[in-house]
Length: 104
Image 1: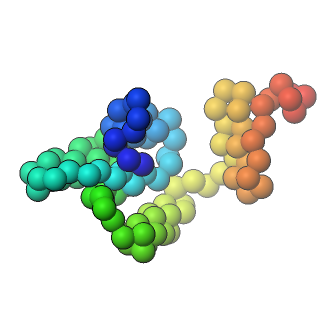
Image 2 (image 1 turned 180 degrees about the vertical axis):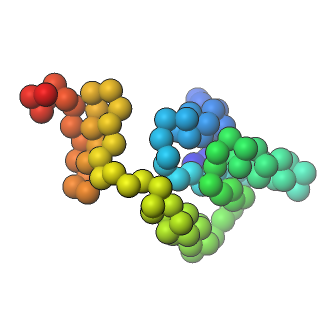
């Protein structure tokens, strides 16, 4: 996730994602000064990010970071479905359901 989201503060979005779900988060930022980059790294981990990277980045490195996070976190999400209110996500089939549409 980029912290420089249009119309929304990326830090808030990352914090909110972490508050709602165990979704892995890699936070990306583009800072010119080393001091700012160090602060971004600390803040990314403080709000619950799993990793932080600076832009520009290597797609190969980002892929490796994502794979490492997913590999370490596989036991953190034991369920094959996630439910939030009337929304159900079936992770095994990649399907989304609204309870009122399923007849529940």
